Length: 112
Ligand code: AMP
Image (tube, rainbow, N blue to C red; front, side):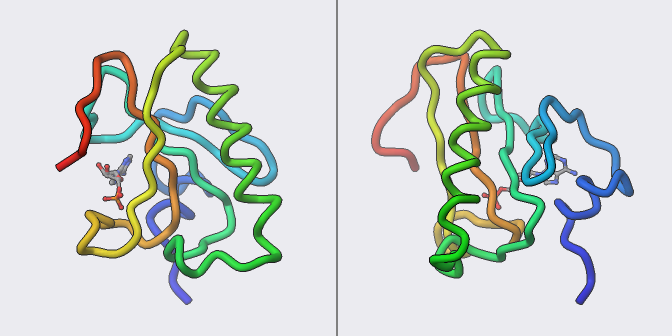
């Protein structure tokens, strides 16, 4: 299996502005930010889509939210949006799950 784009970032094969890293996950700035703060929180494990998360991944998925909380504090964000797109029709373009953290501006609902 070839590496996903985000595995290559995690393995330092592609540069990224990494703001957090541990043994299970990393967070880096989105290359095409949609808000003043737009950070992706990514597990090292290359789960392709949210609907392929398994029961054995539950702790890992919880960890992504812990990382998001740590990163939000680092960034000085109190209010922010966390989004995970599932499938191309929902806007997913990189098939390695990631939480988008969007902050630094007011948000509209529903998203487009
Ligand atoms: P999604 O469309 O939900 O799969 O989100 C993928 C995100 O990855 C998009 O917001 C892209 O702008 C972002 N992205 C793509 N390539 C890179 C990269 N090399 N470094 C950082 N972010 C990227």
